Length: 233
Image 1 (tube, rainbow, N blue to C red):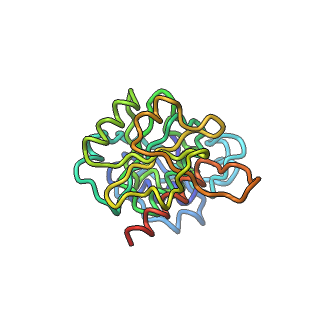
Image 2: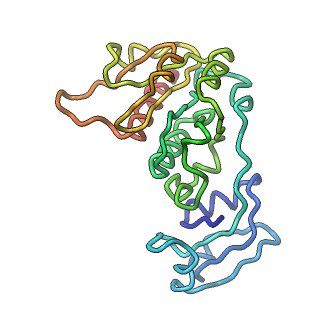
Image 3: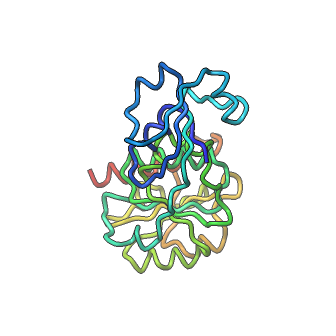
């Protein structure tokens, strides 16, 4: 796969888990990086770089050929539940821009990791890495076959499963537990599926001004993660 953009490429080069093969860089951009020993680096002009990425992709003078990351396992994320490190669970969020933005918030607020259903989440691509702005390299991401079973395992590990739903009577602030929490968010429009709701311990809403539009899932995730950080810190 190919990664592009300053943040995505720099984070990939700094990630020992990422196998990298070749870096194309403009002369100016190349001076901002310290590639690992042995990596092939080719200087290229903007027109050449533009041909290496999808049309219109903002490469910022950097394109990296690399292997996809090995996904985390759910068990990896459940080893030592910590009240200060929430788990983020997404129910059929398929837009890579949204997923990338959720990863950025998860990295910013110290989330232990991200859980998605394998068949209903976007694959790891350059566009997702660009949207995540480096967070793809820092936040462990587990893809599971069955989200309901994963939520059962999350509960068994000691997490309180808190689903976000606009119609829930309780507010997010009032529903947050004192211990480890898994924040469960659904796709825009449909929200959490019924089966996912039944595998949550509680539902909560982010209070909005009457008449306001519903929040983008990535914005809702950022608010919820901030609320957890404020509770614990």
